[in-house]
Image 1 (tube, helix red, strand yellow):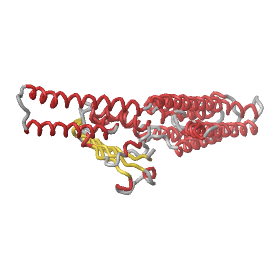
Image 2 (tube, rainbow, N blue to C red):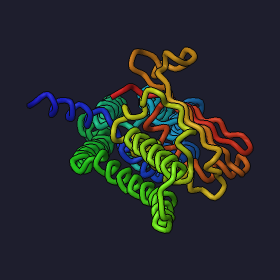
Image 3 (tube, helix red, strand yellow):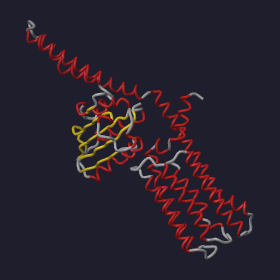
Image 4 (cartoon, rainbow, N blue to C red):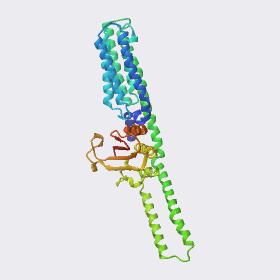
Length: 399
């Protein structure tokens, strides 16, 4: 395996469906919420109305609370405004489910006369499914195996002490089977999604974002030069044709037009994709404060996300393109970074400010999907929403 292939393999193993498709992950969040809420409701009903033995009401209540806590962890961590879903949240989710499993078996310590009320052996399985869009396949595999072992150990121990109908080994396997099956499905989903998304990105990159940008900038330059020719050059030549002689004033005007064209050509040559994206949607290049051209160090994915946000923002009916401002600096040029991701050499800080003629609620309604994607791409994204303004701050490592 080449070094490039090795890097790509590691990338596929570490990136999640949420990182490849933030909006798709946001759309799947209601499923995780329904699974979590449904699991808590089922556990509560079974604990109250369908117990094999009287057991311990205290431990039954603890089981429901632990299960509710694990659902709350997924609910909070899967929020698009807290993306990406952190590893510590997944670990906590698994630990809470494991603790709920042990508490559930302990709460009904006795012979297991009905498998229908063994809710935790199924809820540990759906717990892995809830996290499938948000964690890489390796994490899902480890978490699922841990929960399957806990299931097998808890129900196997109960079957050993209170044998009832089937051997303890069979009881342990049946308890672990749902988690193993759904963990396998979740792992296959996460790994396949990452692999397909990686191949799509490679193919898209073969066309090259740079080529698309170059074509767009070239078309813009051609349009600008046509405007200059139609506005200045053509009328000047038409006027000269009516003159009997060329005067010094004509020569001075010709020099002024030539200087203007020269300045425009230099500006066109120096124009970046970022300036083009801003100008083409009504903004001005002078609103961009990036003296070192650092915005060019964004990678293809980051560039696509930023361009998409700019296009949506500057074309929004409530946004005044003239009020757009951008500032790009090396982090060392700014105040000390407040997050770990914004530290270290080669880090660039970006500040975007927009004038929005809308309320806080309206701004969120318009831009929340785009902010969710930005937050996945730039984990340290800081969003400040105020009446009539939207301010974004984020950083990235130079590529």
